[in-house]
Length: 497
Image 1 (cartoon, rainbow, N blue to C red):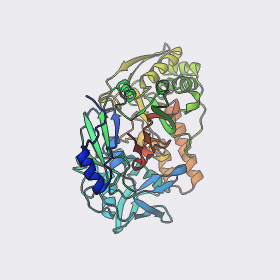
Image 2 (image 1 turned 90 degrees about the vertical axis):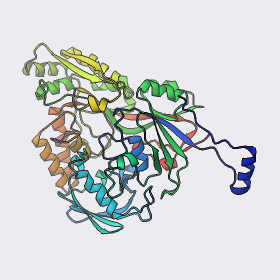
Image 3 (image 1 turned 180 degrees about the vertical axis):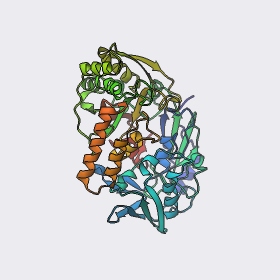
């Protein structure tokens, strides 16, 4: 199959007619990219779905509040947000004149529906672990809503940054996964997760019509195949691993971009399965690795920051600072205390799904061998990895950055849907509750830090470092800021022919 762009061809006669009637007809601007099919074809356009089609939802739906420059809240579909004295209620003024892709008006009833839908038990959305504190959304008038919380939370605007908390039309939950009707800069024209999905420009977008006409998203499960498609000019933008960067040295064809992302690979050990139900075993598996060497070898020392099994990004004000040098003898001692004086055999599953995932597991395997930790690596198919492997097996995981409160609740709170290691600790949960209810910044920070210290001592996920992001795009593409993909303003992206 060829993925080269199609051009609008017109005859000389038609061109003359267009010149006289409406000016010169320009070639259609089409941006091609690939998706990894990591949900095995179950991807859909519902932003709250656990198998959401991110490349679609990111362009067709919008948030109420987005992260602006410097990490501060910035208006999106909400123009302002004001708490009461206890931070148990937040009043939002909405942006007027916004329309959904079907021509209907966006208003407060859509906000009420979109936010209250998060807590629908039938949906089982992982976002409920973070925003389940929304007890009710009251419609004050068509352009004003009041969000009522079950517990105080002074950081609600930052929780609304969540990439899945997007506004959909009132009552559309049953069909939104296929229709993709939002207010965003692009409209869903066709949806085929296992083939080709197309988005078309929303000419009536409230912040100005997009500069490109279409986005074509092609399913390419294999990382190396995506890389080859990028080199061949069949796609216009792609993520990169460090070892792929030299392949794009030709600055006349490609732009390589580095950006702060706060993302990470980790290794998940299921805390409710023996022998990983013993916190001594889990800590031994984590402290046996040399995090500095992993960072330097896999991504370059200058391209990330060490993490002591803390998911929170190094530039987040609530991140805990912990020291975690490699400790081979300490790991051996912990294993012996747990009943493994001769070491332990561990099976870890990975996949060639994202750049560097397999190499990450291989380096870990080599490093921990000195502590008697014998790692058997299994390579799973990329297709369906997040559905069939993640959450069910000890495996390599991958996360992007998100605010501390969201991360710590969504991925580690007892019973949370995306609690990949099945970690359950009532003391940890209580610390998060107390941090949320406090209106004092320093008090909250201290509580969040204690929660992260528990993760280092007893958690089930090994997180050695946080990596800056890398991407490559054609020199024909402009308007891509050095930010994580989730924060790109896609209507400002352009492509020349």
